[in-house]
Length: 285
Ligand code: G3H
Ligand code: ZN
Image 1 (tube, rainbow, N blue to C red):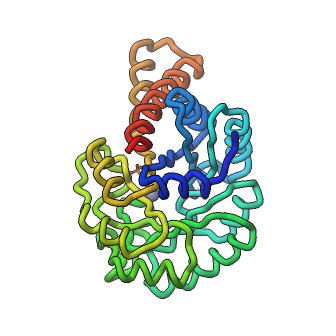
Image 2: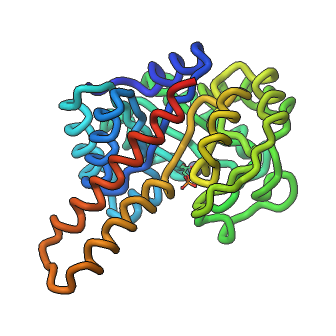
């Protein structure tokens, strides 16, 4: 069934658990996340990033497919727009039925991030949508090198707890992504998170916290981060790794293979298995 991100995130927050948000980039990955969640019998947030929208040239086709898959699932699934820098895309996602968006102005100065995030949040709240923002930039994004502000918000700089509290109070955001040692697109799971900082931000801020770049964090690291105060755990690369490894193996084993369903199906099965495994790590505290 289609549910809201607010319902999933707030329930996890109140119970001190994690809730997983996994990135989908095409129909097969939407199906893989859904199949994994059904196998684990756990709810999940399916998120589509602005980068994935750019890849397809628009949000509607993939969004409508994801809504159809989620609606006919046996478990609760919500849809979330991930890393939007384009304010128009935020409006399009809400029009299409997404219950939540991440508006990411973390590469801008603190005051610019605050002003823009407050305006987007106001408009989204008028329409009943839940808003996640980011303060202190989590590195490793495609746009890092293209448009990076200098100084306090350069990738790698950690989120300051008091500034985070002020940011949440002035913008009215529903969830906050924080920089605590993770980085996007890591293919090894050896990032060292600052659990002391997570606990400090958790005490200072009264909305759920979001961990980006969670592929770089080990199972133990994820459990510790959730115990220290993280709620929404975003994973993309780790699931891509599982999908792509199975595709590579399937193609490598048969040079005559031409039916796309053979290797895409193998990728989808492998990603579903990793989805179920990671969901169990993240959701059980
Ligand atoms: O917003 C999405 C996540 O932060 C995913 O990052 O690909 O490093 O897991 P990741
Ligand atoms: Zn992210």
